Length: 130
Image (cartoon, rainbow, N blue to C red; front, side, top):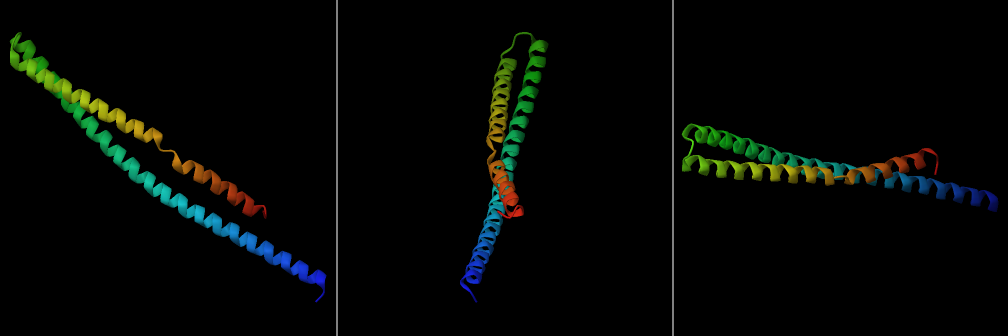
């Protein structure tokens, strides 16, 4: 074997190792994306739960306000409807705040996009032979 053939074989080995390393990196990034998506799904599920709780609170608040309004109109001036109105308004505000917080949480979650972009870039490099 000549020196030229030995150098050629070494370059091929280096290139093969480089491609294998890029493949391993791609697979690791894919695993990272899977983990991030799982975490993201958990966070979204929690946010949906908070949003649901907020919606229930808002509906109950509106119900109390409607009952209070009905009692108030029925009795014109009485203290019971005033108390029901305060409770209803408190529930409505609580539900709206919880709903707004859940929506804000959903808007903040954008982690997986960067990893997916990097995976596409790595796949392109591997396809083009680096």
